[in-house]
Amino acid sequence: MALEIKSRLVYKVYMQTKDPNSGGQLNLLIKIQQVTATCEWVRATLGKEPIEVTRPFAEESRIEIYFDSLIEAEIALKALPVELSIQIAEAKEYKEKDWTTFWQHHFKITELGKNLRIVPEWEESPDDDKVNIIINPGLSFGTGGHFTTQFCLEALEEAVQTLNPESLIDAGTGSGILSIAAIKLGIPKINAFDYDPISIDQCHTNAARNGIDDTIHFFQADILNSDWHSKPADLVCANILTSVLLEAAPWIKRATKKRMILSGIREIEADAVADTFIQLGCREISRDGDGQWCGLVIDV
Image (cartoon, rainbow, N blue to C red; front, top):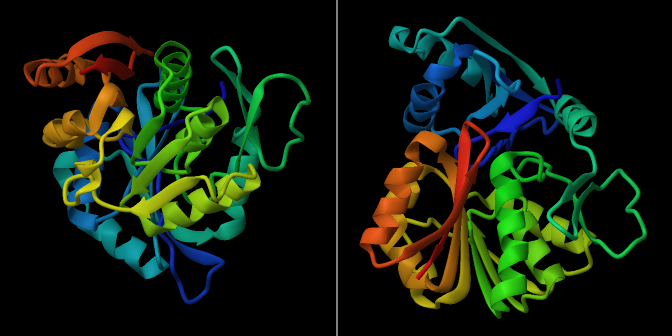
């Protein structure tokens, strides 16, 4: 079975090292039931975004955390708490070529929705009537291979067809894939942000690959600590952590004129997210899931 990239927010690797071609990598093998607790510990204690690599329907998951140096990875290894019940843990040196090889092996052309196609930069774009979105994920999350990204892209395409939106806010833009799709689908005004400056750089690069770098406003911001919601848009897309969605719910609602597309949600958390927005006066339109992850479409 092909590997799937699983994330609760974004799969981000922040590497600024003296040697740009190497760093440190901490690999963990854990039971599926421990994924949430482990990822939350990594974020709270190490200040890193974990990458979850899981085979569909597997009972175990591999978590990868990237650091500026091997020493940092080794220190993190020694700090792992016993209550996480980690089965295997190892720290090793990371080579830039390993990341490139990983993506080129696992990231293939993906057909989505009625007219969308995600094309890796190293593949040739088919010449037909479909919308080609050319992406190199680099160090940011967003290839179209994960259910949450697919859900957002397909819900975005449907919203363009039914609501004719003029504007979009892309909260937690990652690789910029949703914003690039939105422009190509005909939404003229896009504001997209992420808290990670590496992500924003990658967004500009991906937009340039698609010939639209000057048409999207990418900027760095924290969804919980900025005024990104002060200028509402017809659509708001947020593919981020459930805990962040719940905390930011009033701002997401305030920023939305017509519809919000929400994902990055575990299926067991979907009711809690939907209920939070319903209590704010919103209306759930649809939801979909793959057994682990879920997305919601909600109108104001």
